[in-house]
Amino acid sequence: MSIVLAIPAFAAATTGTLALGFISRWIDRKVTARLQWRVGPPWYQPLADVIKLLGKETLLPDAARGTGFLLMPVVGFAAVSLGATILWWVTFSPTSGFVGDLVVVWYLLTVPGLTAVLGGSMSGNPLAAVGAAREMKLILAYELPLLLAVLAAIMGAGAAEDVAGGDNTFVGFRLGALKLAETEGVLATIGCVVAFVVALMSTQAKLGLTPFDIAEAECEIATGPFIEYSGAPLALVHMERAMLMAVMPLFLITVFWGGFSFASVGLAVGSVLKYVLVIVVFVLVRNTNPRIRIDHALRFFWFGMTPLALIALVLSMI
Amino acid sequence: MDATCKQWVQDLEKRLESFRVSVVARGSRRIYVDVAPQYSREANRILFEEFEGRLATATGMDTPLRIEVLYHYCLDTDGIVVTLRTWTDKDQCELDSVATLFEGANFIEREIHDLLGVRFRHHPDPRRLILADNWPEGVYPLRRDFATRRDRTETPEFLRELTREVTTP
Amino acid sequence: MTLKTWALKKSIWLYHANVGACNNCDIEVVDCLTPRHDIERFGMMLVGSPRHADAIVVTGICTRQAKPRLQELYRQAAKPCLVLCIGACACTGGIFRDCYHFDGPVDEAIREVDPEAIIAYVPGCPPKPEAIIAGAVKALQAIPD
Image 1 (tube, chains in turn cyan, green, red):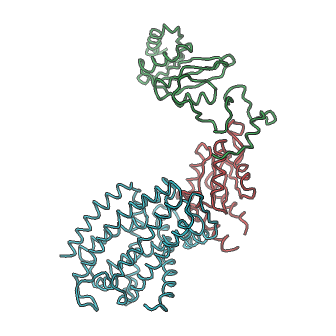
Image 2 (cartoon, rainbow over the protein chains, first blue to last red):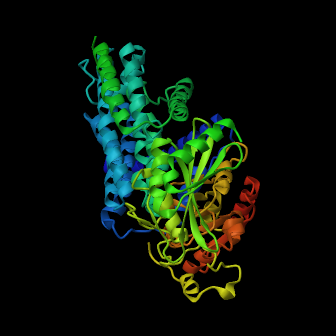
């Protein structure tokens, strides 16, 4: 990836993912509204929200550590944009990734959660501190099963056919290779399916959707870590969350289901349907479950999802 | 008068006769007991512990001669409400606190103190309960001589000043 | 109409503040979110933090104890911020006008902090959700372009 292409690619990926994120957020709100027999907001609603936030004043509380507080949303936004860029690059040309790009995308997508924790702690508000502590515990909870599920997918893909351009059956941490391997139908293996389910649950927590939106429980701790943000930083927070909502389904279908492929019209339509299906699963789970407590969430992920992911790992190694 | 109610009246009269009370039944489910202030705490204890009454609430009244405090106990087995009335004169304005007997009377006595000015002796927590933080001491809104806002020209000076004051919480 | 005003009118986030209400008006405010009235189709959403709010929905008479707190809430909201006074009690003090704990209606409390505040009055006891929506629309029309 030459530097001449990288910067326009970054800009294009950021705007594209932002647009896709707004569409995903709108799908979320519209489907939620429809499930509740309501009408729901118009298609431009997430965009209007962000533009409005950019036009409001930014308030900095006295007790907050100003620089860090204002910097955290920027860092989170940058991390998601970079992760999205790599992911789109791999989607469009699967052979040009680099070894370990899966790990890079992984830790970039962890950064928004961490910036939420840090930003909340730096805002000097006790409710934000509670929200930050809960978000920290939640990160510890869901990252482990997600990692095991991705490992299971790697094992499963390696146990399948030879990877294009590779001389060994071990796929390794290359997103492109994973993607190619799976277009040959690795999701059909039972291990991969179980891993996919585990990953869906973990992503529900990562995106901060009910039943795992413990960190920003609106009624209980008044939006948790984001309570003191207003104006442009809050707009960045919302943009970052919208982009995460666009990137995570893409990440999931790239790792588990063969990603976006434009080889033929049928495959392209199929990819879009896969993406929308994942989002609709998130929205349906969100609307049919109550919010659970943080200790229940920890127990669910460590003693429920992690054994399941280990089983998936074993199954995909067979 | 109901037969059960009559029975309760007789029981109460017998138990409380050393306090020289007057026990009257009005209606089939209401009994009124008047007891002098020096015996009020003991009478309350008897009603709470021996008769197993449940304190529903306590109310206060500012009458021309004195301030009365009424404790309303529910006898849940028969659905009868017994009201224990004590009084205190307006200058002295002190009563023995019932909150020392059971926790349920704690808040209601604080409220009566805030609004009517009755001081409850030995109350475990005599802080202000429902009046605002910047409300002046010694002004009891539910007394008859408290000026309301009905005629703004008669609002006392200190209250008029208070409406301008904005204190930080 | 500038982009900023268009976005503000299309996406009003409400923060509900009860400063001494009997809860009837609160019930009607929450009723606006139910499927029958559904203010989310106008982009309105209830938020948990006053800093995220574009409109503070005030119910209840402003009691003496609540007045400095309501003023602090208004100061902490990011401007531009509207105020919607819901119910007769918030507009004028209602039937509690002569009470000892009444210290001036909500709009006097807000104007002490900000004389230029946009305040909408929705009378009623309690006002119907349709009236609340009409009041919100009138407040939006009063936003300067």
